[in-house]
Image (cartoon, rainbow over all chains, first blue to last red; front, side, top):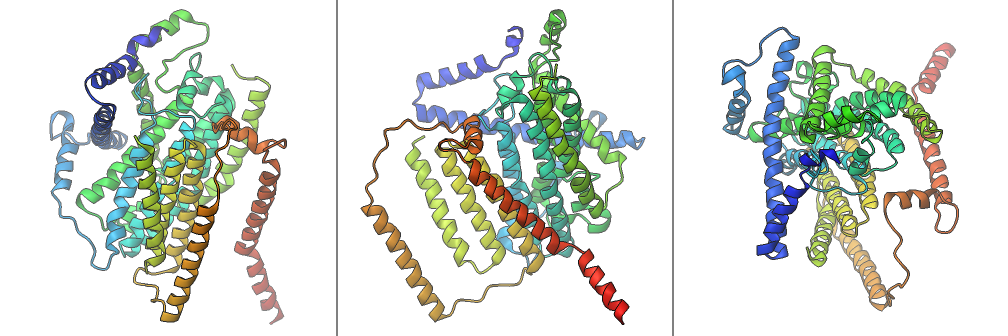
Length: 362
Length: 179
């Protein structure tokens, strides 16, 4: 295969071989775990900061402003400065709060985000583990994240926080259904839940083109529901700043607030990455069936680059929503999910099953 | 990694948090400890390489049932509320029941002869789980699957009727007319 020149498998394999040549298996495993852990930490920190910067720039563009410009060239160092400021802030715990749960909540949110990120392949061979329930694993783990939000709201002993947590709970539990069903539609099409298998199935064409109508519907539903699941505008009722100050994280400051903030952006990345993997081919370059010459040219662009370009495209879509649409009311949010998205989704699964049964795809 | 170490870790966590679940006096903390018990159980399933069941455990119990519990606690109780301490009589009787139950289980487990099976293991990959779930042949789960679907449907209809606003509103209207 032509794009093997950008495969990371030889690199990881050579690291593994050189480590296990001189060390015992247990030590090798420990060192490898440490390397992978540090890499993920670095990635999340750098990527999170970059996303915050990107969001401010995108927001500024939509509002015809420049955005951050003063710190570093084009304001590139602005988020780093903000982060240092956050680190130096005092950690305040409300006096009548439930201290244990109050301190536990940010960790639940951030751990869940880290665990879900672990199955996402960034490039050929650059994935920490890949097993038969890949997609299902991401949805099942990320369904726990809402507990962190609920706990944060309740344990702060603050009415704004509690209302924010309730809204967020109702919203996430509802929209999880749509996310799951949109993914199931594509699993029916792919015939596997293994992420490497799904990407391999898109070698001749991405699923969104291959599965035409039902795949496009599933993609739209997934992006809408995914935006809602990450608590981002226009679904950001949980932290609606004009009515609830900051919703469930009103009482949090310093690094604990940063955890919620960072987790929101990691979740944004996870939703975008899942959309990329399931609909847009993951790291797979743009291929069109028989056009050998075109496919070979596309193979020259590395998988890592493809993956991040597609992820940024989806992230840009979601930022576009946030800065274009006004915030929805609670009843509108629940109506949208239960009266529109869910029925559309169920119909779409039947449509997709028919498409697969009769081989009506490309 | 030695699976014994992993097993002791998970089992220890399950025991510790299960005890904390029933001894804490704050109801939301009990729900959170229960969450940890369920997540550790999912860890055991992962250890056994039964990934599908582990993910179901996370989705249904941790992500579904515990979220519902926490949600209802959020709606009904205040942060300052604490469960009252058990009276001496209650404590003694609960302790007796617990000890009797534990003894019964332990004696049964010790006396049971566990025979290692010689049959080949059934594959636990997703395809096979899916096929077994809807097959009506040997080891098929089609009937329980359908029966549970009907039960869930009945529960859903019931909850819709309970939560419906119209019946209440129409009752109020009819009493108004009578007056």
